[in-house]
Length: 79
Image (cartoon, rainbow, N blue to C red; front, side, top):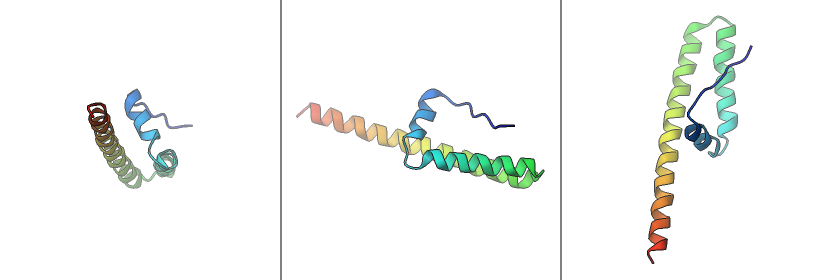
């Protein structure tokens, strides 16, 4: 069995550029899967909620970083 993650291309690409994001995501998925396999619904649910928060925060951070990067490029081009 495996866990399949479906996400919009830009969002998953942005997450993979974050330092250690790949290992963090694998670890989170592993934790969720182990809890499901052990039939521990409460633990799986909590791990899934924590994972969702991590994903949301990562997307927000990456969007802010991209906004800053584009602003810096615009400023540099206008000089």
